[in-house]
Length: 119
Image (cartoon, rainbow, N blue to C red; front, side, top):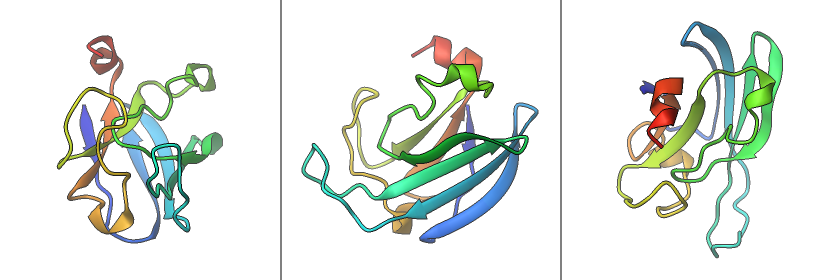
């Protein structure tokens, strides 16, 4: 498990190597939209692996794996946001990530294959 450094800004693009994989991230806050939980969840993530799109426009929710059904895309591991002020099982239990809390309240975590076995 590894924390990915993110900043509390509404839009950010950065690259990082995760488990030998060259990853380019784009994290951005869109206008909040009401969702099935009755809250506004407007944080989205794009991910490129070695220059190839793996995720585009994926909504970020607390304790929800971003690559759960996308293992065929070649990314090894998974990503989740964790609300450090929320608690519970790995389902939507906390507040939706909002850019002002990125890097402090809302952490982006890379899960290695060994971490996934424990979920």
